[in-house]
Amino acid sequence: MPSTKRKLKTAFQEHMNSVPMEQDGTVKKGSEPLGITSATKVMLDEKNYPQKRFFRSRAHCNPLSHNDGFKYPLRPNEYDWSIHYPEVAADKRTVRVLDIGMGFGGLTVDLAKLMPDKLILGMEIRAKVCEYVRLRVDALRAEHVGEYQNASCLRTNCMRYLPNFFEKESMDKIFFCFPDPHFKAKNHRRRIVNDNLLTEYSYIMAPDALLYTITDVKELHDWHVEKCTSHPGFERVSDEECERDPCVQSMLVKTEEGQKVARQGGHNTKGEKYFAVFRKNKDKPCLMASIF
Image (tube, rainbow, N blue to C red; front, side, top):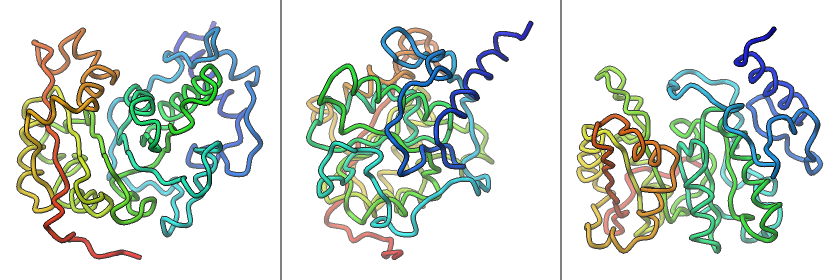
């Protein structure tokens, strides 16, 4: 008899075969609204929410590997957001909040409730967890009619293609929650917060926009603080202001990794979580010239 692991893998593959997909693992644009097929039903609970056991994936991924499979627009204005936000008016389909490395989407869906007037986009490089979040958002929209229309997810490599999707100074908030620490010094260039990428983030962030970081690794937290405070495009937000920000509380308790740290301790035995928030410095010119 096939093992449980084989059954889970087979169920996921049958589900993916039943959904019109692009080569990069995103739903094909122009496809009809998706119903729940018999292959997909196996992976859902009684309320049609996806079950995590079918979507488990490796926690680590090399974002610097050469990924030809990802599709991306040559310019931000060429991307069609209608498949992500079909019930939002075309003239209002501008993403304002990014949850980069969203995992299973706990923060993405909570931010959609906190900021119903803004479009929230979770971004993830791993196909399985991105498909989990897509199904999760579909289930939330079906259960709560009229809600969660401002939440969606996109599978891509943010370290390579972020400026291809978003216009200059279009973003209000960007979140980096429990990113891969890449402990080895030779892999520090893979960290999602670094000097070059901060310049890209600054490019797409509006004046006074906020960049949020959280981790359970003290050394990585210190790296975030050092890189962001030394970058001319950012300045650290005070602890007092952070305490008043509901988004800080959300990333502390609503992310799956944050909940896991509280239960098990994560990378530290005390279960501590370290966060810092940085504001886009409106008085400093963007160091990145327009690429389009």
